[in-house]
Image 1 (tube, rainbow, N blue to C red):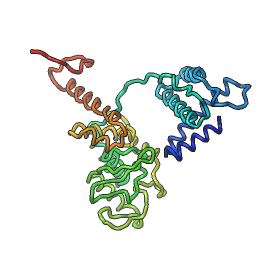
Image 2 (image 1 turned 90 degrees about the horizontal axis):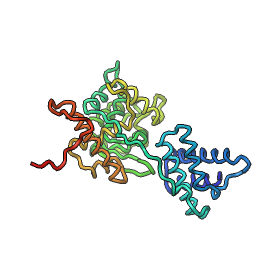
Image 3 (image 1 turned 45 degrees about the vertical axis):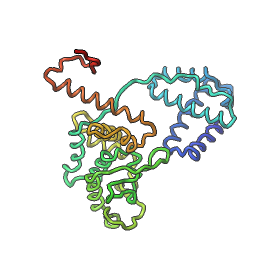
Image 4 (image 1 turned 180 degrees about the horizontal axis):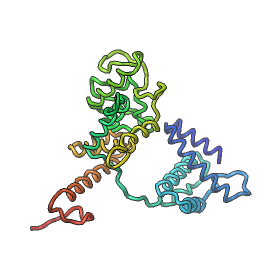
Length: 318
């Protein structure tokens, strides 16, 4: 199975253009399954992928369940096995996909947390109320909220990706997909203020047309490109001061989309800005907006007077 996993890794990297993190997650899931199978069959020196059947994978999922693995994690690991065996089928290494017939574990239905517009505005100001302020952190938060970028896209922004005169920024997304999205004046001014206080050799005027060298916008204290983990820590540190507690960078992405929808933006435009392949992925924000609207109504209207489970009255007749 080792050779099959290595071949699958190569396929993901060269043909699917999967990110390093995606490949690492696939391999981690497959190695765990491989270790389980070896423990179940200690007398077998090597595991042939063709000997794995549907019952083997069911036993693996049962083992994960007994370990109290989350259903979301189990679903991901099953999906990894499905993708792995689809690849082996195409390559003629196995005849059947043993994971295809297994239903995905039922997922809990929950909506992602979204900041209120007031909380989002407050979060943007937190870095500036410290002694001396933090230009980088303010610019980082403003950019996340202004563009809806994933954290991996944020840290990948280079100086030449900023087209300030047009109000645009070039993002590199999942699977090496690229897109150009709007970025607001407030975020651009915050970035310019951050660049201005960096060492002179790094400072750039975003309004000029001159050629700029490839250089990360967001850097750590050593001058290297900021990591996704560092961004998560920065967002958590400032957002911890909000009433609802700390949030992740992805919460700003959710807030970006929901607030646009609240202000009348259409789903197709939001889909393009978020880089979603399917419109159905974007449609979850309609539920977020509706739930927030109803929650505000229930809390604020003096004559709401209805159970929280009641949501919409349909076909009211005179």
